[in-house]
Length: 366
Image 1 (cartoon, rainbow, N blue to C red):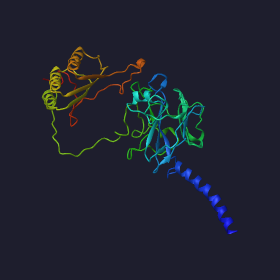
Image 2 (cartoon, rainbow, N blue to C red):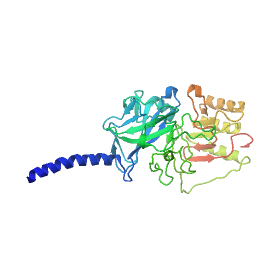
Image 3 (cartoon, rainbow, N blue to C red):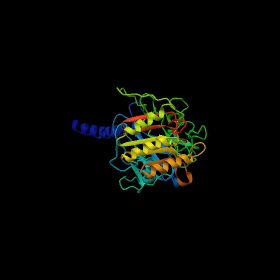
């Protein structure tokens, strides 16, 4: 009799322990999902929105097996994560419609793709859920088809999230024409102390675009923006030489002195560049074998001047690289910022010149 009771107890307890283990893998200590939908690009830059993508993140303290987990929009199309896929604590992965299109816009390959465009990227099973630009849902389900997380955005037409979403849907943050909805990545608002997503409440306020808080919300993100790496401002304590040059009187000499000291590389980002004297210093650096790269704004107020074109031609003829940040939407070309307004020079990857002035004759006097 005792043996029978023992066998019966084992038969009952084992399935319960397995079930509890599965539940624990889906839940973090605070009671919310262990894995969240962290970011969604639904209205992409590429033709046919080939760069559509969803990022999921493990916000728990331990690894989560996501083999066979699914992403869909509540319709028939479902992308399935391959077997033997585990997310480590804090790890986030990108699931993309087409890896090559994603890479063109983001600058790196996704972790998984549905259409086989990159041999080095593993494929998702199933079919990609076409995310409607005017409103839809993104559902994350586990291998048993249980709903883990859900995002409703814009019109949220069919409300397939059910109890997984409360209140109004998330919409792109577009307070003015400087913030386009096309290409905007919906992403979870971050805790300013930890850099981690805010606790999940299944509401629009969980998301940076849907949160009205001046610190946590009212923000945008576009492909190519590395939010996680640069979430906090870098702070350095160092014994170093700091030189202050007043423009336009003394800035020119300070700039050309640094250019003359370059041994391997000079990287410049500036809105405009019209100072021939500084260009001459860069040409001299090229003659020493120093690599020179310049990035400028292609659509400044008044347009690119003939002087700037002339300088770029001289530098290009000498083997330097002169690039412009440009927007041509009908060619699937999008600049990452409305205006490139930074003004700095990196010397040998070790020293930096930061300026409020453009590289123009009147603002960096020779």
